[in-house]
Amino acid sequence: MAEKILLKGNEAIAIAAVRCGCDGYFGYPITPQSEILETLSEMNPEKDTGMIVLQAESEVAAINMLYGGAGCGKKVMTSSSSPGISLMTEGISYIAGAELPCVIVDVMRGGPGLGTIQPAQSDYFQITKGGGHGDYRTIVLAPASVQEMNDFVELSFDLAFKYRTPVVILSDGVIGQMMEKVELSPIKPRWTDEEIVKLHGSWAATGKTSGRKRNIVTSLDLDPHRQEMFNAKLQSKYREIERNEIRYKSLLCDDAEYLVVAYGLSARVSQKAMELARDEGIKVGLIRPVTLFPYPYEAIEAIVPRVKGILTVEMSAGQMVEDVSLAVRGKTPLYFHGRTGGMLPSPEDVLALIRSIANETYNPDSFPGHNRLWLR
Amino acid sequence: MNISDIIKPENKVYGKSRLLLDKEMHFCPGCSHGTIHKIIAETIEELAIQEQVIGISPVGCAVLAYDYIDIDWQEAAHGRAPALATAIKRLYPDKYVFTYQGDGDLASIGTGEIIHTCNRGDNVTVIFVNNAIYGMTGGQMAPTTLEGMKTATTPEGRSHISSGFPMKITEMIALLPGVVYATRQSVDTPAAERKAKKAMMKAFKSQTLKKGTSFIEFVATCSSGWKMSPTDANIWMKENMFPIYPPGDVKDEID
Image (cartoon, rainbow over all chains, first blue to last red; front, side):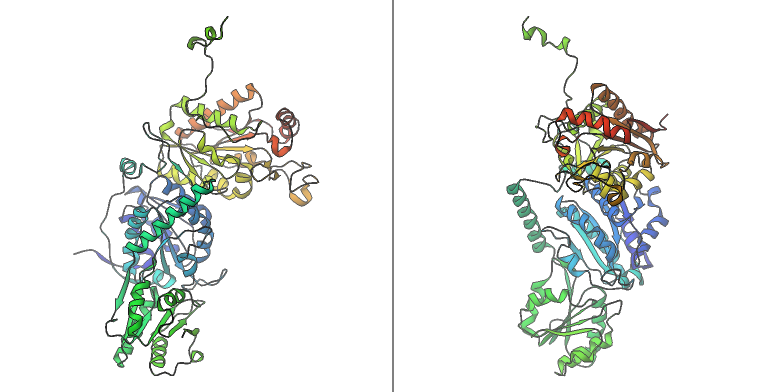
């Protein structure tokens, strides 16, 4: 029997990092994700696995520690919440530009500015479209349960090293704080320094041994031709990621007349609403994007001709819905329901929205939050 | 006597470090960076630690330091080299890690990172090149710019009323218990170079003692930024910078 314990989402992230052989965590306290740093400090993995845990002086320092650790081939992770992620964004651009692997956890809270410490999904644009300067993307995974908070840590490291790119686990304050039963991942040893040289010696700055050229970790190239070629290389990597790494969950879409698209906590809420609607005889399906980059456009597109309407539910004023609209392309009505500021969508509101769309009485003003017929 | 009678191995008294690559340096004539690079290369070669060294280059004139010294390098975002150094050293405690940073990089945008790396006493070496000006971007005021000194952004001369005072970073750093060695050097004469080389050797060697951060400031020239000939820049540095930034050890707790 695999071990199953009751954990907060943030705790699951921390434990999963140690168990999958992470070498270093560098973080700065910010609500609602401080339990990741606290749990790791409490675990003190240095005495067992040798994993380093360090409280940085700022998010800016933390992300640059990640750059340094990743640049010498180690498995490194940081975590933060929205305002802290904004501070890290310069560093993420450098990491993408230097083609370094690392894992960044964003436990989203409401904004803009200091906003609130309550949960939100309003970092979608920032995280999935690059966020910092220059043409780059990060792979983005959106967990919808504490189990996935656990599972996505190792998956993120695998993807980060496979493509030598930063991977973001885009979670929110509810998934980070709520408790669920979790089956822990198997314990994997950290790479030895010799294994790192063997696996990543072609690029990692681990000390120039005789017989190889020096490894230089940089995002700088002042020659325009080479810089454009490098950008083309990055773009072809992102196209490869789009071909290989799209992940989503499709629920009851086969006979669906209406489709809900939602990720993370909003998908959990929408799933409940879907079940309630089906009890009333309204045939609703759900698509939950698991990767937000690459985005499952085609999975949504394939269902568009079969449904009478699509509803996107988010904890934002309308961000992922823009990607949904790229898949829908006006071929069926697209509705949006969003809550912000730490307010959460409720199954009852989503059910009422689905009902009003199905019986053609939709009125955006009769629901709380942000409501819009996004695309007719 | 023929020249070939003189060029013989037994007559050789000095040679270029094997670690100093043949690539032509982009630094301006009279700039101190090249000489400091040379001292670093010689130090690493003489300590025979080439395979264990990771250097971190800054944003600024020395961004391309990795083109000149034959070791593994990481190039940091502006001011963040000490954060990289902390992580690398924690993850590889037995490697030698050093940052190479200018005054804009270390004393302006990177003050947070340098103070905290030094305060944690990370066993790394920080090489801080202070020429009192932003060279790469075209001669703007740095935190270390002298009062009255004219730069592109202080055309009337720096006034502490609007722009504060020249920052004595090495003295500030020396106050931190995490710092085991803080010294100020220059490379304006062969004698100063020899002293600086000794300081560099000491700083790198101190990493094995795991007693804290070693910090070397170089008071340096920027003849282009100062709009002087290399010779005049050296004289100006001695007359104007040394009184504010006097060469010598500020703290030595290695022994």
